[in-house]
Figure 1: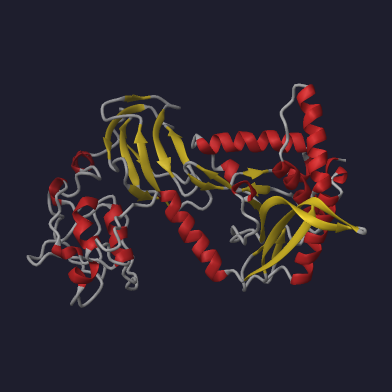
Figure 2 (figure 1 turned 180 degrees about the vertical axis):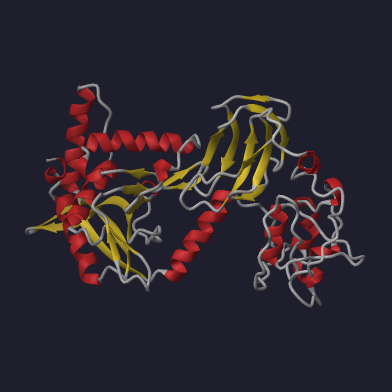
Length: 435
């Protein structure tokens, strides 16, 4: 019997959610078959079987989460390598949706702060999602009776608690968490969370669960905003020549039967060239104790994409060594994969700098949050025609604004300004971008 465990599918992944099981109990599984789709912090990815056999049981059902290394299914490979006692234990392992029809055997260890009990002394068992909601909202689950298999507390059982958190948690002496269920990672004691605003008729609000990706984005960017000392430098460029160059380029590309390039493709190339001139922007802070800065020799530009499945940042490797046409083709391919939820962990790792462009939404300028462990991110606004003094005349010219968010631990204001100065020079003399 083989335990299939939750794999690590991205460099920042800590847990994953089962999106779709492609194999059901009793199905034959061959090496290379797609077993399951797993939603990570960055995308939904397919996980293939590395062993052949018959799928015996799902230990984590669709829609629920598990930490890396947690068993999510059992596969019978036909090998009799388990003792009778072991086989009996395996047979008794309940699926995650069936935990715990039978109360666990008495244990001599004392109840921890993370154990919750009913008034009758019975220990509680709940899904990973419910355990997380309890920690985040300081919910007292000992007042609930689970309606899931075996009396397990499921998400629907928490609706009343979430709707009226103040009423149901009033008078609770200590924050309540849950006992550990078989196959479910131990809950860690946490400090009491600040209760969320109550859901009431006056606000006309209703609870909308966050996707696993959205929750991890919230956690990581929240950590970045709290722990990285951001500062911001904004510059404006006369992009009239850039617009004319793009028009001429696209006319020639269309005539040659090749795809067009966008302003964003030109900006990626310009930013990559500017990073090559200012390598200390293309760097990462390690930690206070290390006393070192990682200066990256490769320029790998992440492109923030607002796909239909959430914010993702696929990475274009060696962007400074690629032509504008190559960058455009690669970016369009990555956008397509993002919308189809087919980006791989490899395609979303290894970034050294990120560009976030909101110009297509009519945004003039904005500040972006750094994507750790990178040291900077460029927020690009839209392009607009403005009245500009050129010599002694006032002429309509295309102008664009962009803001560099930088980590002040490794990047000083003068260095950030010099980087933007180089970027502005490239934008205003765009022939140097494609030379």
